[in-house]
Image (cartoon, rainbow, N blue to C red):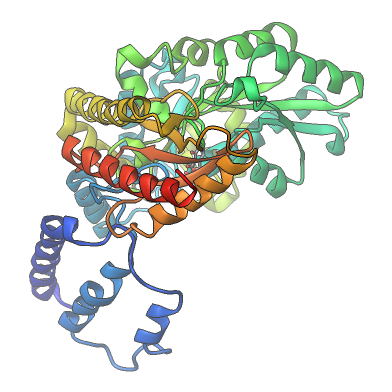
Length: 489
Ligand code: PLP
């Protein structure tokens, strides 16, 4: 493809993207395909001779697009959102067109400095303390691929800090603390690093949907220290995956600071962290605790923050802790600027060496939405979720399983009075299967909270309107009534 052919193909690709968004409502939310559908449709080797571009892109439209779960669909209320905004899409396009691996400031001066700038813009937008800003020269922000990677990198930094302070600690006594509601990436960090994980329970029936409190943590720390173990990192969550619960970051942080200062506190706010852009949610989302005590804080702008996948923002209170854990600079990577210490060398802040130019899309999004547009989007999602939660509360055959949290509602159908124990979970499994049978129209996802099977409704697509929430609710009610009738009432 030469430059002029690219120009034509590029215009055509943008036209196709526009058509996709014009017709998005007509797509089934969940693709109506079976495993193996694509393999059957494609040859099993790459072509010998290059093919005309128009054939290739036609196949994308014909075979690939209909095989995707459409996260941007206005009636997708599943999991947590994954974003695609036009500003972010153009950022990805331009970043991909002039790739720079940014393994050092020397290799990517503009991409490195833009990342410094946008991470500070975002930190200020979220109200993070100056110590987390790159311009503080103490802590700083870095874009990672995922919240899982942000967490892994934080655990690695925590381990190094701990072992530098306690060099004789046997590796097998090191402990990562997570809660029963921590995302699975907490346990995965333990698997990857070969470290033990202790799960703190926040799941008692009286506390369904609740977060970690300081007393639970204190008991665990006292027990483990008495047993000669070495807890060195605590993963807290602001906005758990199952129910949007929030750990008491301020109280557990204060306990760590006063009694166990060697324990690093990571705050995983992969989904909910962006609500900090709205001052009215800062108290609920524990901003004061984060600012006072978090060693690291992560939120995914690619989830609920309007930036295209991938864009996981990680801030650390002390950048040296990351660097001492991750820096290894052989002669071929040395540069004058790096040696002088005047630049941020992001390869020492993450796992890979080369890195994509992700700050460009974040810059485009933050500039094109502005703080007002960003806040408006977040507030809209929360308002639409409250519309849905209100309907749940007003309908006797449904109930909330935990309090609605930001843009997430967790609910279930109530079994008829006098139904035998255990009916509720069975009924709700059947209800969810019946809802899945309507997944070309609307998609919600399932979960379990404290042994209770329940259904999650999460608003996040920037194309969802109140009328879509109404449509979703009508389908939920229709399906619910049919299933209840089958169960006797
Ligand atoms: N943490 C929380 C609270 C999440 O909800 C998720 C995913 O939904 C993750 C971490 C993992 O995110 P990622 O896919 O970016 O690793």
